[in-house]
Amino acid sequence: MQISEAGHVVNGDESTTNPFKSPYFVGDENQRIYFDFLLMDDGDIALHSQYGCVEDHCSEVFLYEVMTPTRLKLPQ
Figure 1 (tube, rainbow, N blue to C red):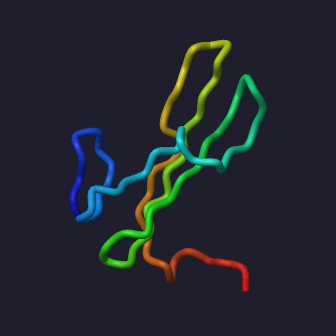
Figure 2: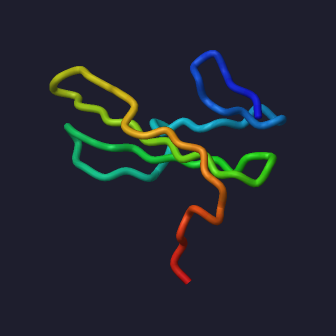
């Protein structure tokens, strides 16, 4: 596993997570939590979410976790 200068995991092809460019989010035009994920080269999954508020001009990492697929419970 490689780590970027920003502290994000990076695959061999340089793919990584970027919640702000992801179509997945919860919230409205002012406050949102954005979500992104990355299937890593070793089979693990990186989950990355970030909170943003336009009115307050703030943005912060909400969750960044790397887990094995067995820890992730997907619906059948």
